[in-house]
Length: 113
Image (cartoon, rainbow, N blue to C red; front, side, top):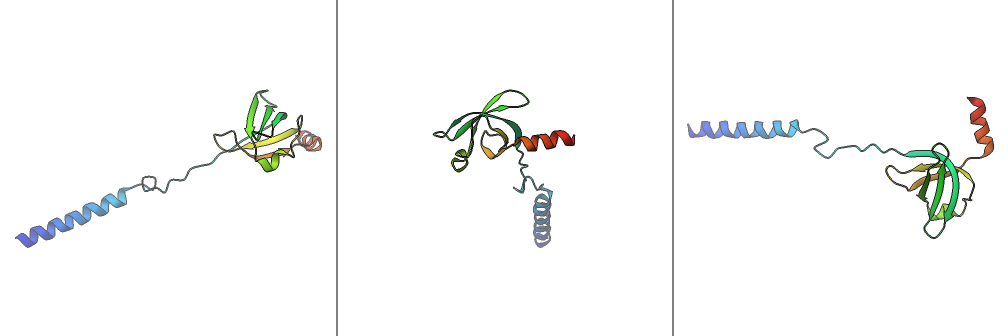
């Protein structure tokens, strides 16, 4: 009787642990994927601060000015009053990319609409 009870308890424990393991969702097991989003806007450079590696850009749509941290390697190529397309990292004011928008690119997009 003791052997039967011991075997029954062992099987019950094995079953209990395996169902608990299989019941976990991928999110609870650390396999969660974080969706990365970026903010993209077009604007005009109002000022450049090479000491802080920051530029101030006036958004073309809203008119709001945003201070943006730029890679020190790229800040030398930027100019005040230049039209740019800025791609920011998700939830930050750090630029992933700052690209000059030329007048010919703007005219091409307007004429294609």
